[in-house]
Length: 258
Image (cartoon, rainbow, N blue to C red; front, top):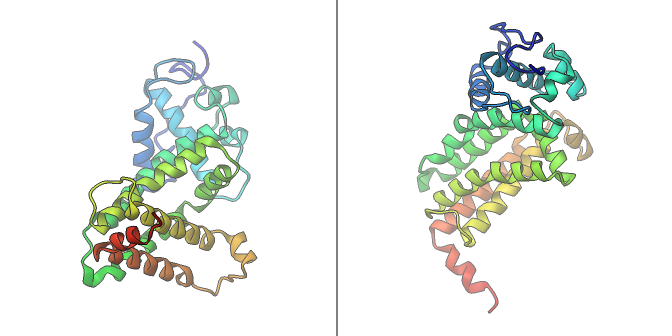
């Protein structure tokens, strides 16, 4: 049997291969790997094959999120105690591996910040709710900043797969902002356009405050609070939602040229 199958001698079944990950993330890794039925050679994955995939993802996550060492496929394989042949049975390149890592990480977003958006925000507490979301989104980015910055960096370099992931990960947020505005569907309308612009602004501000090098470039030292950008982001979100709830969409349509 080719390397990487259930009889691969490199495969170990130690129970602690996910021990370094937080429980929600380790559970998401297990769930994501269980959903993969075959490796790239077309071999059906049994228990050992799934564990091998889990070990690769766990090693990649540890290297990306818990260290500052350079991340390469060879380094990930070494950390997972696998040969490159075995790793290539599961991932063809770094983008493919990062996308596999992003899947369980983004799954944890359901509890981290999407749940905040799913509540109906009362008018009288709108700013507090917006700020709570922006803070939750920032906390998620802070926990996974290196991974998310790697994704955005590749997307900015026109990596089509990462560009698609970046877009797809924003869609649920935009849809929920539109729902907060009082609309049921994510369709092409002024509220969707406004929600998209709000989301772009929030993501860019969170990108800034979680990027050490970028903070240096804009002279935002460690003594400067993230709230310098997070509070304005929450205010803009509040204004956009309140404007839509008050019928501002019609004013926007009336202002468009014929």
